[in-house]
Image 1 (cartoon, rainbow, N blue to C red):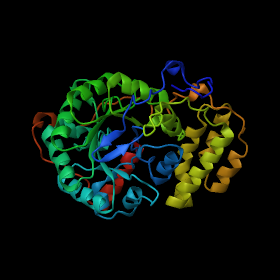
Image 2: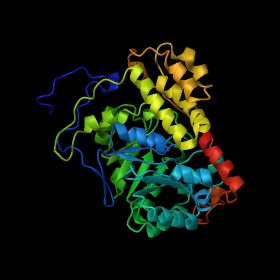
Image 3: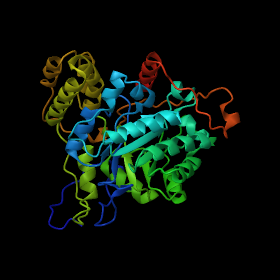
Image 4: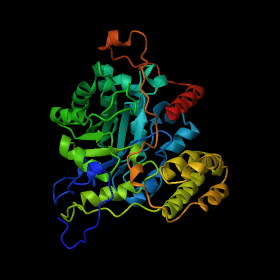
Length: 412
């Protein structure tokens, strides 16, 4: 499989020591309409995370489809300056992918049409958000509870997309007693979606426990459109295991890449080169702390350029924890890193890190975001009694409501 390449010890957790690399031709590019994605890897849209600076950083390490954070359709259509900024791109970003949030078919259709006019290459609809403020109003992961409403939303997207692939992302359901992913797959397939992504946890689970890869395999067996699996891709080898176990067409990478954008380089390595027919190769070791400090500095500079130094550096605070997670002695600096105000403050703290410190194997599968809690999902009063209803729930419409909504999304 890797004839002519020197053998080296694999840097992985015990779960992935013996996972075979991708064989020549074992996997195909992810097909989303006319769009082809190789390797079949998608950066998960994450609020407060997958803005243009982080997408560009990840793209610099590897390839795939890099999706924006969730953009509220109403804020976009009303010209909210922050919403417009988060939806923006640069000339070097291709393909350009935007995830939108709305529970209003009219707003969704209009936003898709505008994005297509701007030259976007892919649009995804968020139907999996578990944030209480969202589900309590009947949005996010509450929408697939009502298949006819979901159908109206997907139909509106597909109608205005002018051939640009549209996809949807869902969770397994509300909780274990109300699973919606099967109906969601049927609706997505019938209404013109090019693919469906499944985060294999319920809204009640949030990010707790192991993802249910069996559900991904079940969905793949039930629908004719491509299925993207999401959940517990911490290492590049996890992606191979998920695709082999479920038959899914691609993987969505979320928390595993926080503070580890080089994960996309490792994913490109293990999948190999589809165009030349080469199988996968063993990834090199992860960067040492000195190289990671350089990545952090580039990331911070990009955030400062995009948002302005004050806001960009404030955003960088959470990233400093993710980048340094698990390194010996990093906890002592964490409080100071969380109080940085300028790029110069960051430079002073990065200078005291041990540049030769090796990335700890124990940190490969450590969560870099979201706690281990679960929740009781909030739904509107009487919501479950009207599952055949296709009436859109009320969305935020004033700028003040939109800003409060987006703050809630970023806090979730």
